[in-house]
Length: 160
Image 1: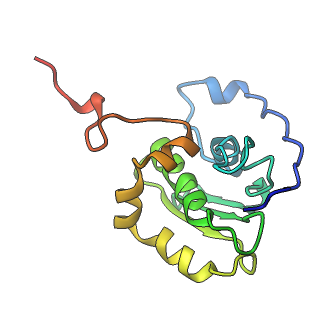
Image 2 (image 1 turned 90 degrees about the horizontal axis):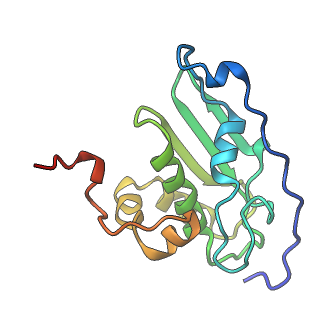
Image 3 (image 1 turned 60 degrees about the horizontal axis):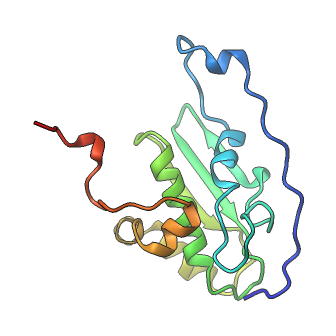
């Protein structure tokens, strides 16, 4: 645990453009949109967001809308952060819940910033592990959502 983390200023809100509100115009995904999705994820050890701790930054978000890919590199506050896997899972779950299924995601630790970088990245790339942890209390606490029906979407139930 980083008992005294540096706290960074939040970036301003992204202005919404008129073309983004036009339902007739295809809306592409960009790095700022991805950053806006993950910047407010809560840290488990501090009453701060990942943006305020500088764990996520827009410059470490890469998006290719034509290829439907998103890559997010995150930087734990200390090289031996025990919450690195949970932070990465929280980012990945937030993106899984927010983006279309066609988008392929890569969430990983910024190279050279964590002692167990390879092991954490391997866990984050394991789809089964991510799916199994998606509805755990720790991940939901970070992402800010709680689900009482972990494997069933209420929207997919056909009520009679």
